Structure formats: structure tokens, C-alpha cells
Image (cartoon, rainbow, N blue to C red; front, side):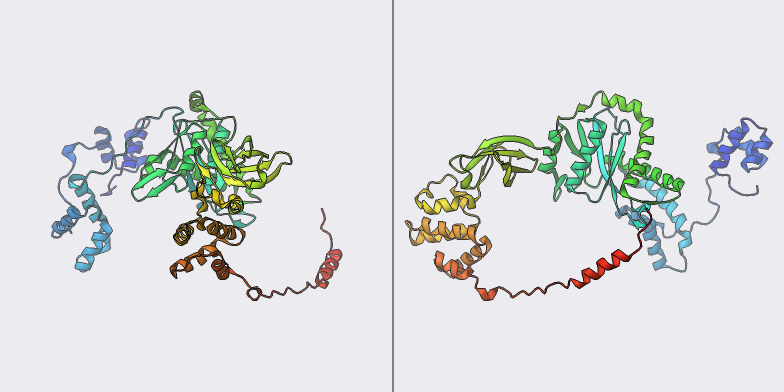
Length: 498
């Protein structure tokens, strides 16, 4: 074999062939000389320390500059070998060239192993059945899938159990809160149970990022609370803490790539056909995980009777205060509904109110937490304007100021005339409800900045819209002849065979 260096693969082959063949045959099959074969077989496949040479076979190109390189590494251990190689070439291009990069890399690697800082240790965790699930998105453009010949850019929402490695995915187009909750609901519905903890990375859909502080947003906590599941997340920039699903990304996408190669085409007639293709791959992979999955299923939590986004139905009666109380939160409603029974459908983020007798939708509002209240001044202002004396002691008085500007206007009116201020302000607020709140607010700003008292008539003058402000829009009548020509063409066109 001459001076050719024997590599580890050849040594492994030599030892394997030596178990069933003579030394000569094993050496020939491994591609080494008989002398080399005899030497490695006597040493059990490795050289003793006495046989390892301690001298260099050629001159060290970096011996004269190594002290400078080492000084850089001590000051900035994160410097890369390419950066230092470029620095040496820039300093002395006649002595150094890119062909020496591999030598420099070995020297730097040996220095870091001997004198460099400690690298971060990843601590393998004990995986407990049913304790945790993980999810994340993975981009799949690299699969080069097409739908009817057109590139299909998409992501997969990937859900998995670290203990059993059971997994499922769903096609997704964004990392939104809606797709996160929808993906989780589909996953646990397919699984039939839910682990006690669910881990994500620092998704904006689940985590509010405030500088160095990363806390779960209220919507995500509320969603998982419905399933009696505790949210968890990895530290920012530490994706390995969500490592089970991260590794599963690579393994699943590799399985999809191989299946696509075997299929002979990456084109699908529809997204539904592509989903069935993915499902077959998942079923095949999960079939090998049933024993450990059974261990998890026995300790995981049962699912709630209804999905998170299924509404809760309540019936309530509108009080004489033009308010209703639903789920311990107070909402105002139009005064015409006082005394009426309303059917409330409580969704996770909204409440829809229907007139109980006709099932007509009368109001939709954002859902509040218990103890909160939402009073819309538009529901009350007409009645208050007729009874301005009730404003001073009104329990929801603060809700009658839509913005700071309206409050400043009220204070200016109080300074002008304490007795007439309530009536004047309520009619201004009524005008805002009947026209445009923003225009009224802008008019109040102008009057206050000018040092004028914001009377109703002054506000009306500023927000008045005249007929000349309305543009003259002319829409020509369509030419129906073009439709007749199209119908004639369609009637003469030959029908396709079915």
C-alpha cells in the first residue's frame, strides 16, 4: 500500500473480515498491506501510545505567528478560523494562502480543546411517559412540492410526544395564534388525550417578548387552561431545549423526501391528495411506536367534553340599567333591549347575543374576564342627554369619556359653567355617537388649543360636511352586447366528452 495512511474504515473492515477469513484475505478486502494487517490485528485495531509518533513530518507554517493568533483567540474565543486565515493573508500574502486553512483549523481546534473556554453542556433529560408534548413549525419549501404544477409554499405544524416519539402534522401557512390553537386541537383530538405540559419555543403567537423578559400571553394560557395543560417554553435562542420536535423535523422531512423520490413525482392534483400522502408516511412511522404510546395513553389526561372554541350558551335578561351580566362580566346593550331575554353564545374571545324569541343577532362584543366591564357610551348617551342631572353620580360615568380629549373638553365646560356643563357635554357626546367620533375629537382638540370653550355649535361648525364636499361619481351603464357575444360563443363551442 506504500505510504498511504490507513483510515478507520479500513481498520474496521480488516477486523470484521478477519473474523471469518485468513489474514491475507482480510488484508486484501480491506485494502491494506499484510504487514499493516498483522500490526492492527495484534493491537486489537488501535495503536498503543508507544507507537504514536510525537514528531512533525513537515515544517509548521504558523510557528512564527502563532503567538499573535493565540492572543486573538484568548481575547475573542468566538473568532473563526476563516477570519484568522484572512487576517494572515492580508498581513503576509506571500507566506500564507487558503491552502493552509485546514492546518490552521486543526491548530485552533487543538488550542481550544487545551486552553479554550468550556462549551455549553446539553443535559439529556429523563423522558417520563405522558409528561410533555412539543410543537413547532417547520418550513417545507425544500421538498419542492407542486400542486397542479405550481410551487406549493407551506409549513407543517409538527406535534409530537418526546417519550414515545408519536407525531402528527398539519399543513399551515403562518405561525399565527389561530394556527397554533387549531394545530394543537387537531393533534390532541387525533391522540384522544393530552399530556400535562406542552412546550413551544418563543413563538410570538404564544409568548410576549418584552426585551429580555419572555412571558406567555393571556390568550395562550387561557387556551391551555381549557385542557388543564401547563404551558412551557425553551429559553430564547436555545432551540435544543425543544430538541425532540426539532430533531423530528429533520427525520420526518427526510422520510417525506425519500417517499417523494420513490413516488417518482412531487406534483399532486390537490392539497387533499398531498395531505393523504403525508398521512400515509405518519401512519407508517407511528406504527412502530405503539408500545411506548400505550404507556403514555394510560397516564395522560382525558380531553374536555367540548373543544376550546365551542361556545357556551347562557340566557340572560337585560336590566333596567341597559346592561347584562354574563360569566360575571358586565356589558352594556342598546336601551331598546331593556327587559328582553337574550341568548348569549360565549366563544373564547367574543360573545354573540341573540334575541331569544327570534334568534336574531343583536350584538357581538369582545369577551371579558370575570369582574371586568365594557360600557359603550353609544348605548347610554341618548338617555343621559335627556336626563343630564343623572350624569354627575352615574356609576359608569368614567366610561362616558372615549378619550382624554373628551375629558379635557368636559373639564373646560365645568370651568365655564358647572351647572350647564353636563348637559352641554352630553349633547357633544351624542353628536359624536351620531356622526363621527374622530371628527368630533379633532374639533375639540382645535377648540381647546385655541383656548376656546368647546360648545356644541362650535363643534358642529367644524365637522359640518357640505354638499360640495361630496364628489360627483359617474358610473356608465354596462354594454350588454358583450354578454350576448359571450353567450353566443359558449353555445357554439364544442362540448367536452365526459
